Length: 121
Image (cartoon, rainbow, N blue to C red):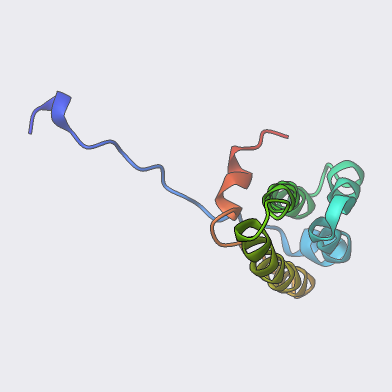
């Protein structure tokens, strides 16, 4: 294979690391990131906390996914079915994210969590 025929390189996805003090001081506030529009609270109130900011960015993506799901669920029949199961999945994913956050862990939500790294906030 010559230089022009090389396969495109995949970007390496790296999980963030956090200071233990940052986690302990901010995990309760960071869990608000997964409760609707409340992602704005850790995003705006704790700009100095990497733990809060990463959870808030993932909360933005989670919120946008919920909005998209809401639009899809307005479509008769198939949209209703997708919406029903989508909301169940969103509820479960949100609960797991809140629990992991309160345990002081960062859990990347499957399928949508990787988009948080594309946000420059």
